[in-house]
Length: 203
Image 1 (cartoon, helix red, strand yellow):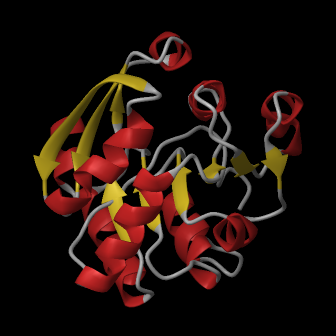
Image 2 (cartoon, rainbow, N blue to C red; image 1 turned 90 degrees about the vertical axis):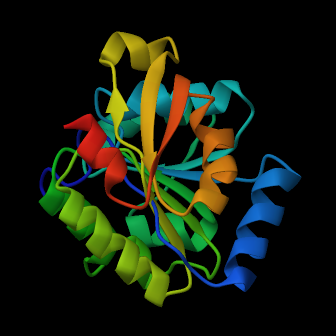
């Protein structure tokens, strides 16, 4: 898991049952409940900071402990693994360097899906292979969770100033819930279609 959480970005998307939808929607709209953030690298760090600025409690982790220091000082709770993040938050954003990193963080021995709650909303802002996004969405759906891909356009400067553009792929009825969080980190949040289409638009 050496570079697993370094860098940043993640996905989300796919259909799921209506019970899970009601669960996600009611929670995401209700209040600023904790948001999990995995991957506090050059992009993920400022993204997590912008969520904190908007009043969202953050539960975060990164494979490199030193990457967690700045957000911890701003009030984020730091935990040891993606599984622990999933145990404490039902909305999670991942921002990772590559497809293997995403697969490890979601499906590894200490991955998100080991502890994910039913109805959780998982948003991957990593730039990865669209096929991997679809695989992660299918794996999440089996656990009763919703996965969407939301890769970004814009560099570190845009991440710091919350001017990123997010290309979102996933179930259309989940877009509003995802946009609530993504709008705290970006100036444009664009719905592209089903899961994987965000990646296609970003490449």
